[in-house]
Amino acid sequence: MATKSQFQAIRGTRDLLPPETALWNHAEKTAHEVFSTFGFGEIRPPIFEPTELFARAVGGDTDIVSKEMYSFEDKSGGVPDPSYMGPADYLDEIKRAMNSGQVPHDPSVITQLEFQLENYNMRSDAQRAHLIWMYFVRGLRLGDSVSLRPEATASVCRAYIEHNMQQQLQPVKLYYMGPMFRRERPQKGRYRQFYQIGAEVLGGGDAPAIDSEVIEMVMTFFDRLGLAGVELDINSIGHAADNCRRGYVEKLRVALQQVKDKLGADSQRRIESNPLRVLDSKLEHEQAIIEKLPRIADHLCDECKTHYAAVKRQLELRGVIFKENWRLVRGLDYYMRTTFEITAKGLGSQNAVCGGGRYDGLVELLGGPPTKGIGFAIGEDRLILSLQESGKGAATEGRDVYIAWMGERAYATAVRAAKNLRAAGFRVELPPTELKFGKGLERADKLGSRYALILGDNEVSEGSWTLKTLADGTQQKFTEPELLQFLKRPL
Ligand code: HAM
Image 1 (cartoon, rainbow, N blue to C red):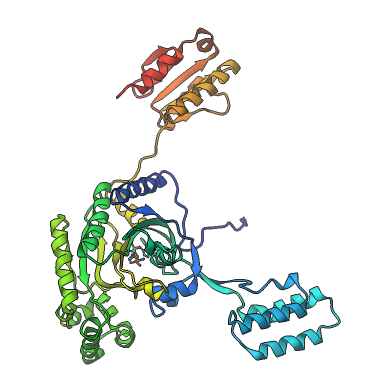
Image 2 (spheres, rainbow, N blue to C red):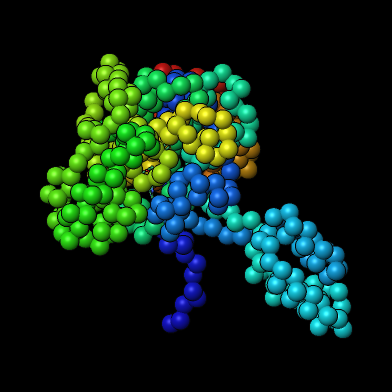
């Protein structure tokens, strides 16, 4: 039999459903609590931003920007919608936009538009405007290119600049949570819409204590949630100078050239484009080769070396256990000095549950004042997966009280009782239609209710209500005030 085609969530996206969402809420609530004890405030930046913001911050050559962004043209840009004006005025608008640099300056477009205007002179203004829209405007890229955010560090830096936050007491400590979008190949723990919980510290210097406190905060959060098998890797990738990372990258490139023939195609390509990323390779046969390559720790400048040593001392002081990993370079361009990644149990190949690092200079790159910065983002989907795998999944929340009512008078009382019990914080199920007591109690059981409150017309006229404890079947009689008192008693 032919079935109607059904809609399905787009590949790489999914619905989060109860009872799992209870675990998501628990994780988010814990983040609000823990981060606020470290003096962080919440920021909620928009979900889409100018494409250019991410291109500049994350880096045009990174996988994220070059392959994975959901970008689209936000139609009219600064040019009014052609349907609201005559074609001659519209032509003027396009010329103005071209002269002011809002859209690419291209005289041939104007010539063609003028030709079309002549050509379609017989038609109505609206038709001509529509034709212009159809044939030219779409191809002109008059609108601004915007992208769904693939990450939020760039947005937080943009907001820092836009709201002059450098004039506030420094550093400014912000955290965020919400969906991010990357067109990656979906697999376990990797989605196209995924969720991050992240934090950023902006301004106020680059004291190693800031790096270590940020790391301490995320480890405290994981600890509070009882995340299993947490491992923290740290590294310093120095700063972009000839006597530091730039010099190292050149040495690395030379060393890689010498072993080029033994490397896979991806790594061969990266020798030129981004040699540091070769260190990320998971290919079995490249591992022994990579182990022999020059290491960044031996090529850091004195300041970066001192900073890294102090970060490690500070982590020890805070009782944070870490492992040094010289191959940890991260996939976004803005990092310098401290980088870190955290893995957890039960995640398979996508086991990084958090990544972060220092990004001094990013705010300046985006047009703001020189500002130090460091932060991290937790992959919430992976966090939840790992918690579930280690048996920390949320159980379905049962009801505290199921109200089994029968009769019209009893119903009015049941509605009032439900209102009062809910106001006192109890989870209450009030069936919308009358059910026989037997059926009602069956439902109460299925819903995992602790008690059933039995309200028939008799109970209501006597003012004595029956409360049944479902676990052992015992029943007690209460007046309305007694019932509330009984339920509220400490267990
Ligand atoms: P990232 O390493 O690209 O860093 O992402 C951080 C975390 O987000 C990853 O460790 C992973 O848990 C999760 N994640 C990334 N992509 C996906 C995906 N497709 N599906 C599921 N989870 C994913 C950043 O985004 C930086 N903005 C972090 C940062 C903040 N650095 C400094 N401040």
